[in-house]
Length: 334
Image (cartoon, rainbow, N blue to C red):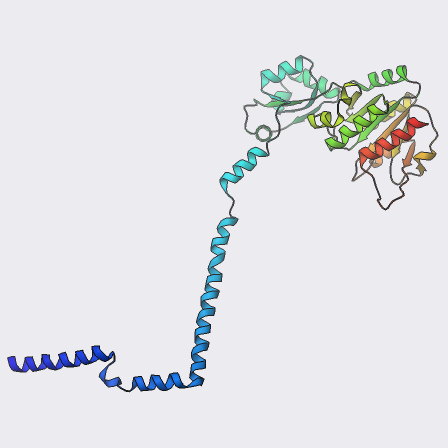
């Protein structure tokens, strides 16, 4: 038994050595020759090249499919960048006051107020109701908002249900403006703004009005920019020398001015009369509308004349503040 097992082992060892030396199974002795014939065959070589190209294409396409995964990571918002953007977008709160006690002291001291936000509880409270009603009648815009909305406006400050924005100049009543105008000039000019919400335009109009010796500017309570810091900056000091009246309803204010001898003229590109041909010298109220909508239809009905500025170029319209400056020059040059 030992001899037979040894012979078996020697035989297997020789076969294993033969296989390990040549790298193929003894039964496939002709495979090398077949491989040589395959490699020397140009038709088959072409197939191999195509297979390689397909493999390369598949590898490239798979890498292309993988790339968007890395690209998509850059498309997700970065929390840190969002926080930085949020803080950079915060409004300037230098002219804001919030909190019950602080707001009450500001209202009681008679400071110029541009706008007030409060909850319904604050508006109807015994402490604030009379003060807020009096300010509203004088043209101060008062908005009743929810607690959450007020938190959004103040960016989470401890507002206690009320906040206000100070104005950079005090306003006077319409009656005071009429009396002042008539006693200081035989043919005064007053500028009325209808729907001009851009503070840069409001500031520029105020600057032009003061430069051409107008006696005042009328700003409606709603649909108009208030006397904010931007308006004061663009006006370049004109607010210190020009009276501003903020009215609750512009159309009622125009009716009151007409009762006191003022002619109301509106500026419009569709005006029937050219401003250069307008010869009236009575006290005037010049109504300037917004750039996109112009003077509202209801306000146009309150105007005695609709005037246009003749344009010679291809531009079809003018900026509201530029149109106001040109018209004031025409009126004061006559």
